[in-house]
Length: 369
Ligand SMILES: O=C(O)CCC(=O)C(=O)O
Ligand SMILES: [Fe+2]
Image (tube, rainbow, N blue to C red):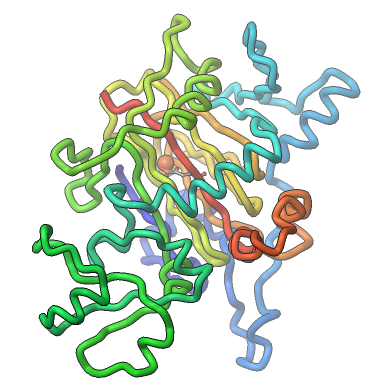
């Protein structure tokens, strides 16, 4: 990847002065979440209101297309034989496809659960792997108010309490434990609440593991195959962007987890060999603004809303276009997640509901070779 490709907290993040000179950066600034220079006492209400009138809303585009068969200038409805969902494209950005409402509510619920329960499980790596080694059962630990504990002592008693795997002496010694153990804590433990780890979860990688430090796919890292059901969705959704009716071959995915003030800076995804193959990118949870730039950061980006259940494809020329997510919406006026939240109304689903109420998840699936 090239550019600011990791999710960062956008609030008050100071941009380097010359970085603000590009059209992409200026547009990011228009939409990203700022605290104004308000007195501290205003803290929670002090988010500047962005003007959203220039953001394309494909929900409205589809509604007016249904009514009068017309689309706004520069946008057309793409007809793909055998593909029964509405797909829109931009005349100026060939290779970019917007599939509005691609996933049903049930499918969205399924992928949110998978993103929180299964996808961060080892051998898949997450942004926490470097600091803590492989962590098993993060979401279960959140539901049970557990904490991640490090054993400094080498006593067999601690090994036993932590379920430490002696067969893997290189792995770091962190494991989830009950709160009560920590109350009787002594210096031999270092601990962090599972709920905090979940809040700070930024990415997990599926299939071939992406090595962020070397910025390539590390074939030698242990990995599982991509989940079959996710491959099926990706193959089905990739159809409008596949050259000559070929079948998309999903080999890797990056799952991005966005908290309320997180953003993903403008970047290119350029580590895959064949750019004629699409990246299939699934949105879940809170609504976001997606910026689709051009091949230069100086090209004026197109801003559009991404809602839970929308899927975008970036293939061919669009693979060379800078893109990013300057903003997610967590306030009830804009988040657009009421229907989704109602799917998590059981007592047992409280943790999912609380998480997704103020978060966005993006699963982007790639053919690497
Ligand atoms: O979150 C999104 O919609 C885009 C994610 C993305 O561009 C990436 O992970 O490379
Ligand atoms: Fe990307």
